[in-house]
Image (cartoon, rainbow over the protein chains, first blue to last red):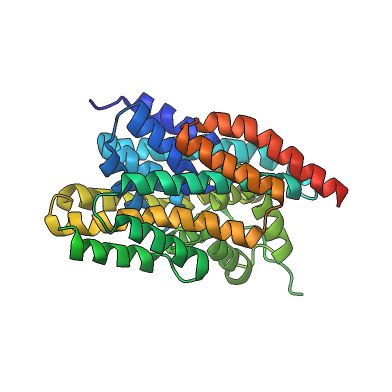
Length: 174
Length: 183
C-alpha cells in the first residue's frame, strides 16, 4: 500500500527536527518508522537504499529522499526531501534572526558538546541496526567490521570501502 | 587585508552553494569552508567557524543550516531559499537518479550481489563514524556512559528518537555546560 503524500511529508518533517548528527544518527529512527512501524519498506530494501544514499554527494540526510522515492515514486522523493529539510530550515531561519545575540554566547560551545554523545550513540546504534539488516550472506558482518575500521582509522574517502564491499558482494553473494 | 567584497546576491548565493552541494562527496563541511572562505571569499575563517558552530547545534544538515543562516543575512528570504536550494539541488537529483537506476536494474543478479556487499559497508560507515568521533573528541566519562546508554536503548529497546532527544538532550547539554562552568 502506497502511503499518501501527507503521510510521507509528516513522517519526514517529524524526523527533520530530530536530525541531530546526520543520516547515520537518523538511521535507527528511519528504520523504526519506515520498516517496523509503518511497514512501507522491507528490511533488505531499506539497507540497500540507505547504502545508495551514502554513495551520493551532498548531505547524507538525503537518505530521506531515497526512501521517499522508493515508497512513492519521484514525487514521494521530492516530498520527503521537502519534509526532511523544511522544518529544520525554518528553525535555522528563526535562529538566524537571533544570531547577533547568539554567536558569541558562552554556552554555545558546551551546548554543542552536549549533543555529541547523542549523535555518537545514535550513529553507533544506526551501524548495528543497519548491520543486522544487511546480514544477507556470510561475509556481510566482516564487511561491516572492516569498513568501520577503515573509516575510524584512516582519513581516506569512505567511498573506497563501499566499492570494496560491493566487489566482495559480486564475488560471494551471487 | 583586502576589503571584503559586497554581500552576494541571491543568484550568487545559489551558484556558490550549488558548487558546494555538487562537489561535496564525503564531507560538505570541509568543502563549504573551502568555497566560502578561499574560493568566493564571502566569509573570514572566524565568521565561518561561528556560523558552522551554530549550524551544528541545530537539527538538519549542517551546511544546509549554514546556507539558510548566511543566505538570510545577505539577502533575506530570497537569499536563504536560493542558498539552501542551490545546496541540495544537485545531490537530490543524483540520489533520486540512483534510486531510479536501482529500481530499473536492482533485480539484475550482478547489481543485486554488488548491493548486497555495499549495504553492510554502509552500516560500517555509520559504525566507523561513531568510533572515529569517539576517538577524536575524547568524550569525558559521563558522555561515554551516555553514548553507551543511548546506543543500547535504541538498538535493544528501539526507543523512539523523540524520547532520546527529549530525555538525553537536556541531560547531556546540562552536563556539558556544567563541565564548562567548572573548567
